[in-house]
Length: 117
Image (tube, rainbow, N blue to C red; front, side, top):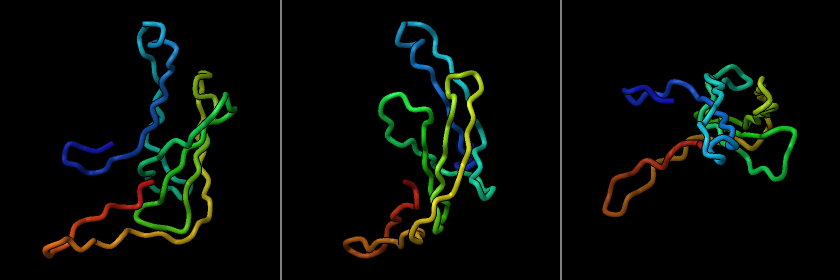
C-alpha cells in the first residue's frame, strides 16, 4: 500500500473467496494488513508462490528491502476457514542488494529497479 504522496505505507494480503463471484454473487474478502517480516520490519512486495491442487497451506515469498542474505517465506493457513493465519520465517540465501544504475546509450544512467521478486 502506498500513500497519496507515493510513500510506501505497508503490505497487505487480501484473501478473496472466488466461489461467490464465480456463481454470480457478491465478492467477499478478508484482509491481513501491515505484514511484518520475521525480523519485525515492514514486508515489501510479498508474492504468491505457484500452488497446485488443494494444499493445506498457501506459500508466499518476499525479499528484505533494500537487500539481505535472507528471503522471507510466508505461510498462510485456513485462508477461507474463518480465521486465516499468516506466519513468516527467514530462509538463508546468497547476499543480494539493490542493483547499480545502468548506463544508457547516449550517456547518463537509468534506475534498474530494486530487490522485488
